[in-house]
Image 1 (cartoon, rainbow, N blue to C red):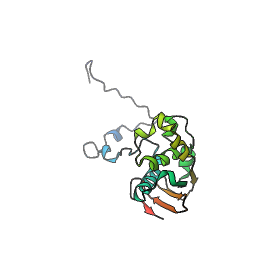
Image 2 (cartoon, helix red, strand yellow; image 1 turned 45 degrees about the horizontal axis):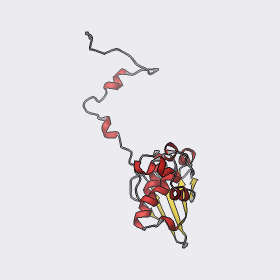
Image 3 (tube, helix red, strand yellow; image 1 turned 90 degrees about the vertical axis):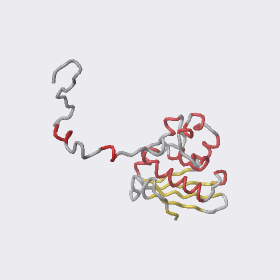
Length: 171
């Protein structure tokens, strides 16, 4: 390869490079087909919680003001990374199980509009976040969650997501 505009330098940052792997399947294997978009502007371990909360809010027309308690059963990684009942700013709210649970019931959507600093500090949001109680379970996969909502009248509504973005099943 010659010329000023070319750049075919044999550079690798791997400790044991395998150059033929870069060409394996060229023209037949498309990595783009294996990629997925993020449906929500949050950490991936929060997605099944959002799915379950949105389904519960929409299917049962739950009025957020009538919620007494929201119990989450999630993968231990979700609790480890995203147990933030009082996020101080937008960045913390993006990875808060409590924030996205509250968003789902208050607004019935989970978009970037619900994760602004103003939204994080909204009184109704802060109040509902404090009613969200995540619990870790090693039996819950990373793409799964169970949400149980207790209403002030005493009624309980529970839904389980076995894989994020798939339909929920009621308990």
